Amino acid sequence: MPSAKADFVERIRCLDASIDTDSVQNKALAEIQHNSIARMLRNGLAVVSFASLEDFIKKRSSEAMAEVSKCTISFSELPEKLQRAATYEVLSALNYQLSLLDKEDKPAYIQEHALRISSTATPNFELSSHTFAHAQANVSGTAIADVLKCFNVEDPWRQMSKIASDLGLTSGLSLAEIFRSAAIRRHRAAHVAGADTPPTDIKQFVREAFSIAITFDALLSKAIQKLLENDDDYIRKGLKLSADSVNFRTIKFIDNKWKEYKGNSARAFRTSNDYQELSREARRRALTSKELIVEFDQAGLVTWWECQ
Image (cartoon, rainbow, N blue to C red; front, side, top):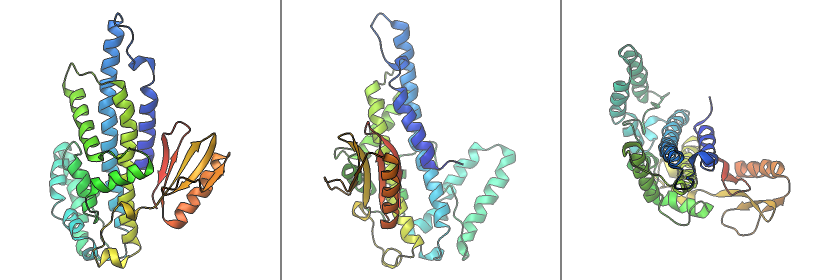
């Protein structure tokens, strides 16, 4: 099964390509039928694009629960907020998910997740995959922040915005405001018959969606790394994670060459005409140094990222 990240990258890059097709671009005012169809298609893309980001948050959060379940520490040593989320707070999500199931599927579903909740009282706990972001149909900005807060990330949206700015994904804009605007645009496109989503808004959301997904994943993955490594400062001393906890590398196509950059340095760490070779070596260095790596294509659009 493809990972949450693989699905997301494929969908968002497909979105980027689709917005450039003639079928979603307006023509002359006299082309009334074409323009009406294009407007409807753009509204559909606005809905699907936001749904893709929501789906990533849900799936990545579920993956995170499976990863945390591999920890060698006891459940009682997990961050207190995570303990609450994985026990009694998850009940609201289970109740909502039950409402979506057919009657014959409900017993097996609740038995599975009840077993996972009860396992938190044992040495070999297994957390529910629906611990986060499954309590309602849509994913809110608050829900995204709550996931990271449960992993000792302080002021999550501010930390995410800082990482996005450092990576060059945004120009210092608040990702919380970007997410809120995208949610409003999605709601309008889905529920207002006369809505007309500009193609530029969808094009811009491609980069914004990558910004939110990558920075969310980077902070979440760093927290899980601390748990898996039994990091004393994080687990027992309550160390808070921030943007400064995430070191990174990037690969960009600049001046007709592929260049690897370390952190915010303006000077390339490595330069090559061979993207595959540079990528392979950069990924190895990122893995060794436990760094986030983000790779961009020749047009400056994200092609991949990996969190260590």
